[in-house]
Image (cartoon, rainbow, N blue to C red; front, side, top):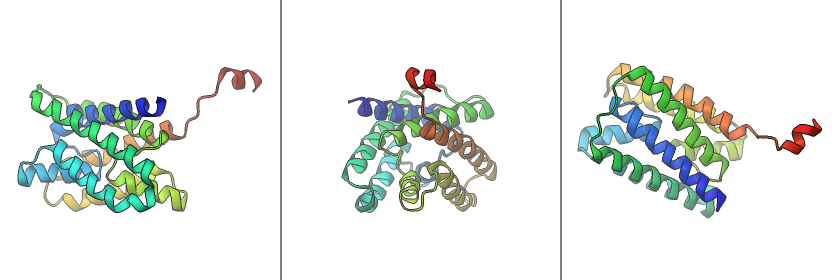
Length: 197
């Protein structure tokens, strides 16, 4: 039950970061978000819907390697994130005023959310699924893997979107992946252990 609550909270943080701080400036928080922004740009498909669809199909492909429990936890997290994004987008709140401040705040909140998901047996979907597979089979930290995968996608979509947005997206990745690794790896010692050490 504790894991479900933490996954729910992590997914909510992820959705809030994307919809309030990043999407208003067209800053993709990752490769899947970049694809969602492009689908919105070309097909006028809402970001929350396109994000969920892309992640769902990617998850079906990775089901064999992730296992059922992690796959179900991930689709649950993706659903909460997508619903959060959709609710905020449809509320038409006046969001996104200061680009750099929004980017930093959004990246930190996003990183905290994804870190919580990773620590509780879920993922944020998208390229995080691939990052978790790399961690499982190669032992590489998921945040660092996500950075390199997503940066490659940002370079690919830079021909379609404004190059300045791509630079902001890379900066967002740089901040958020460090927060992800910190939250994912940092173990808080219990008072008994702290007294003993």
